[in-house]
Length: 195
Image (tube, rainbow, N blue to C red; front, top):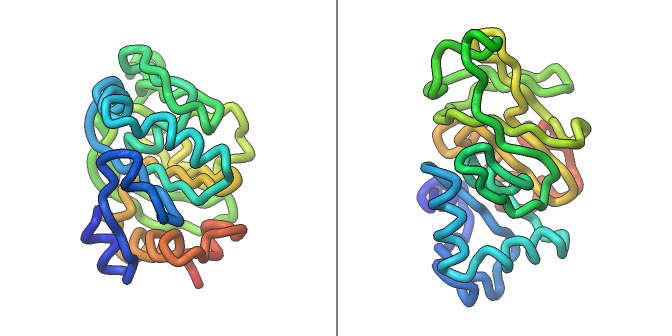
């Protein structure tokens, strides 16, 4: 993740404790793994409440994959409480018999279909999906075996991607650059990624 931001010209550093956030203008919560262990690690490092405060102050925040899932109120995975900065639940894909996809975890390239009609390709690695309370926050959706789920959320200064922009080619690089430079501030994700 650090290399992906450096590649788009961002001044980036890893914050391992709250002091690491001093002077930062933007916060990224990346992640691969399990919600419970990620939440415990953020709490252990003293970053849980600062991340919540960051969002409450309206500062730019980008959650990627597991990081996006942690932005919601809770996760079905181990009933893990989330940061609660986006209302909603991170849900496990339903079983095939309940209308869910056959291929779980969802790994690989898939279409990220913007509500505006623009389509891009994103790289996914996940077994859970974002289910926000406010569906106006949904900027893009993705379909997997007939099951459609939100893949990009935006509310205020918070952007959440279920896909990995750092692995999503030109579209992903443009999204990271737009976030890093402030181009996303107050603009739609589609307009920023095209700029």
